[in-house]
Image 1 (cartoon, one colour):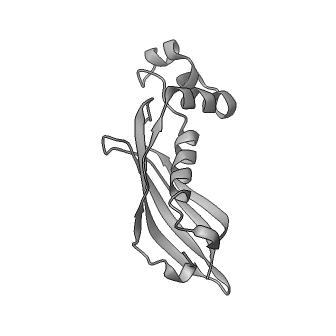
Image 2 (image 1 turned 120 degrees about the vertical axis):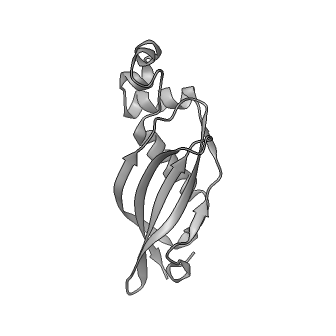
Length: 140
């Protein structure tokens, strides 16, 4: 979509994606090697009762699901900001995540504009697990 096609309050919904134990441990091994993501025994004794996904993995998956909607298409120039990132609930192996993206900001520029969407990510139980604002420069 071109910048001028976006409207405040528009909501876009993504498909869902499963978070597997394998994806959690692979991601954490590289990017967030903490016990709650990698050590089943220690994680079971911890506050979450088992292995959980890294918040950074949840954020990355939320972004991926949003981009895969194709809403920006070829009009996106670049990301410009991520703000108000919240890891609300833990994500466990076998959770299914989906995203609702609401347009919350439009800042027009000469040849483009900044589109800000609030990404809210939900698990298969309908519980919000993540939220964050994402801004991108989008052509007209």
